Length: 351
Image (cartoon, rainbow, N blue to C red; front, side, top):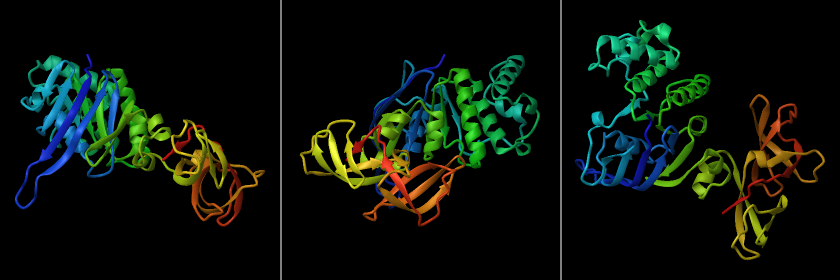
């Protein structure tokens, strides 16, 4: 039966080492992953996401707050349950498979207390779950990177953990394998009914796998939300800049619901508290800028990136500022060409 994960007001500090001073890494972090769902910690290198994962796993002692897995309090200022007693499975970045054991041996490594018949049945079921039953007697070096990752997932799930943790799970794989495996892992976790938490710096992995995502910055949790809300309703300039692609366009407040920009008068999704005449900035995503040959507003193509069904154009506006636009790829415009554009904003985010 899956268990929820609840992190409340978590703090962590690395003590001084040699000439290094003590270093605070996590500051008052709180979030919850409901049972059977997948949460993600997303952020740039050094933001504290791996340290937080290690705290949940029990590999780091916390400096304050609490960590609960299901009904169990596994860490607070006076409690530290050791990793082997937390009921947590971990899928490491480098898979951590034993080269001298075959796939079945790797998957069943943590089942030593079971009878051989029980162990064999559990291993077979786990390999069936990750679609690797035919490779039970192969060795890690005989498998592809994607297959090795699935073996690592089977090993984590075979012990029926309360919680599965993923540490940058796909960073060693090529883009195509990463995309395919993200979907497979998501389906496997759903079939197993597992609760999971992963850390990654790759927002595409986060979007593909997670139900909720927390964005970390310098040890602070900036926002815990769905991918949709992080993209369309970021609550800080950092998140708006870090999640997805976009540019910031200067605007002048007309009234509580309207602003004036060089691309015309725009209506805000939520009323602004800024006074008429105040200067603000609007977040403009590539899907907000529509290619329209009939529009009187034009922009010059500075760069383009082919994405199969679409081009991502980098455009120069009349002011010299840049904008991004996603355009169907049958509109094949040259660098330096002027194209008509208009703005269609479902969610206007202003800072």
